[in-house]
Length: 242
Ligand code: SAM
Figure: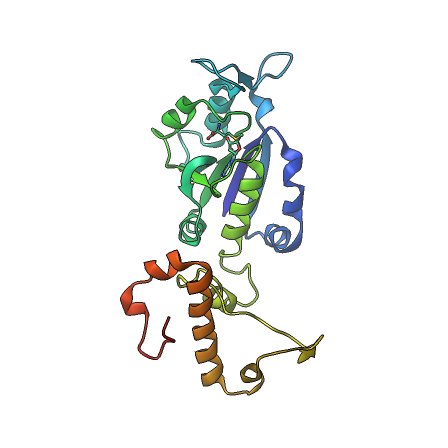
């Protein structure tokens, strides 16, 4: 997958050299470049923002540098990337969208700052490429950089070859609309707390049953909205009664 990120703070993306994302880059599974939006400014102050039309607090990102950046990174004569724009006004970022993005050959991220990017940038981009405005959640960050780090981490771990054990993807929270059951490792007793006996029984059938029931109970307690959204056919009659 090819990923381009446009930002006024390229330094934010230093962590993308680390851990499994760094490894995916070194292995050629993720081809990633970070670009400074100010490259596409032409004044001595390298200005990217201005006051909002209609008045109000804060500044808005001007369309010209963004237009030039998108022209350079998504030229008309090449296959168009999918443009992903973090914004608290976007669609909620969920695992299903992470899967959708992981299937794209090219992603282009536009990191907003201040009060956001002039809306005409997105309108114009939408005539040339798919545009998705994505929200991390119902709160407001300073800028889109942290949101892009989150989205990229969720997407990269879904790319074939990135995770050593793809089984992890099958059993984790949100894979099938449930939260994962609690997990334990050695020692069997720690500070008076025991690992549930069943997990040490070696009985794989009972362990699978226990994990499924714990996942259902935990989801019911913590995220009743997820439980309510489960299709009836995904529950079976051996499931714990909630
Ligand atoms: N004025 C905007 C609004 O009320 O919708 C908020 C702008 S915010 C201060 C600046 C930038 O941070 C946004 O353009 C976006 O890139 C990023 N951002 C803030 N909160 C976000 C969220 N919940 N999800 C994704 N991106 C967010």
